[in-house]
Amino acid sequence: MNTMNNTYRLGSREIRRLGYGAMQLAGPGVFGPPPDREAALAVLREAVELGVDHIDTSDFYGPHITNQLIREALHPYADDLTIVTKVGARRDAQANWLLADADAELEQAVHDNLRNLGLERLDVVNMRIMFDVHGPAEGSIARQVEALAALRERGLVQHIGLSNVTMAQLEEAQRIVPIACVQNMYNLVHRQDDAMIDALARQGIAYVPFFPLGGFSPLQSEGLSDVARRLTATPMQVAIAWLLQRSPNILLIPGTKSVTHLRENLAAADLVLDEEALAALEKIGR
Image (cartoon, rainbow, N blue to C red; front, side, top):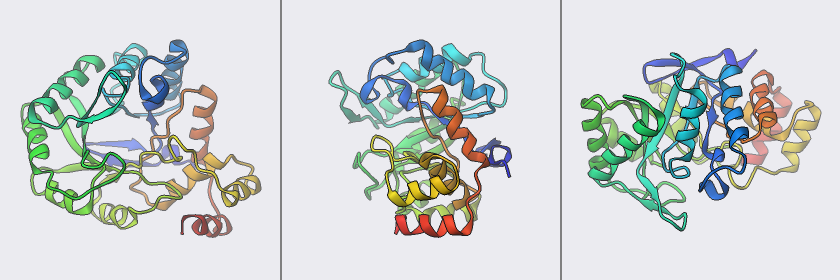
């Protein structure tokens, strides 16, 4: 089974379940330009050439850098390419991540994404909740969602998603506007969203893990390495395959600034984990 040929609905489109996250294309700390601009452009072009039709980005990566790279590499975009961005934060001159969720800030962020990506309408915009930058924290998000819903009514945004949210916040948002996806931290080790993934699957809504391979601290486990050796794969390929087999509504956006690693990540679509591998990996997460 080639999972690159398996699809799931994101908003109004059926997309392949293995996409690409552009965050790593910015400089160190997701700030400033990449050390090798041509290499960054090559990764984006190779991703689309290999069949990726879902790219995740944000105008606060850089800031502005990843969106400008995407436009330079891929514009005019293929008709089947879905670009997902997010709003709700900003960067200062010291590269800090700051809250930016006032109505005017959200509108400005949407216009910044449109300009830097070269689009007239954004396919999907995730509202990144920043009550706690390190993980979901309870609190009403009605005002922020209503602000994005107003931009959707004006035709600037097609679909709205949520990022870094709790189940209660998801339910609150769904009373205001249809939610196309949820993007929270989830991977082989961090499984706090198991119940949310299953609930979204029942509703036919996509779940998009950020840091699917551990993010700034890549997943490391002797158990993971043992499974990878037995299957003649890399540990990161096993981690991707586990997520693809975890639930059909999971869409993946592993990021890299290396064409070699990009090809390795996408090759994980062909890796099927047997019962022995799944049992071993289950022990890691628990």
